Image (tube, rainbow, N blue to C red; front, top):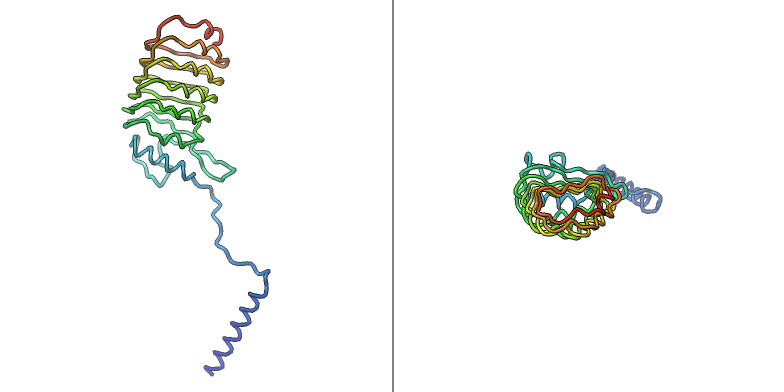
Amino acid sequence: MKTISVIRLFIIYMLAACTISCNSNVPSLEEPKDTAPHLNESDSLAMVNIYKKIGPWGYDWDLKDIQTWGGVDIALETSTNQYRIVGFNYYGSFSGEFPDDFRKLTELRVLGLGGGTLSGQIPSWIGELTNLIYLYIGFNQISGPIPPEIGKLTNLKQLTIGNNFVNGPLPEELGNLANLQKLVICDTKVSGSIPKSLGKLDKIKNIVFHNNQLSGEFPIEILEAV
């Protein structure tokens, strides 16, 4: 009886194998794909590096849970089904130097860094963040000149640089910020004359230049633009 059972099982197995191999229409079994959107890997690594370099701020982050990432805003990029970091805006206890990792957040619309002892210069690569609409750098220890590359941020609507040790002249390239509505540069060490190029800012509504080391007359071209 045992021999007969083994033979029957073997025949059943062979018939089943033949049926599967001979029928090309039988679909193969696959693991179901995870279609839920995920946070873009480059964005998440960059933000974690930023936290490690100039943080912590607010309450401690769980680096594996973006819900705990204070000041971070995300939006879904439908073409890639990924969440992208589109905003970082926080007033906290930053320390260290202005991290290069911000340049990797290519979908940033908002960048706000206020409060703390953040040092270094405003980097020239700031001009690469061409999606920025709002840029605020205040109440830190940023020094050096405002880079002329800031004029590449043609989508900016508001630019505020204040209560830092920023120095040198205001770049003429500020006049290239075609969509700028509000410009605030105050409580800094910027010097020299106010660029006449600001008169090209057709959409400007508010300009604030108090407590600096600027000299000369206020250009009439700017008054005509406001």
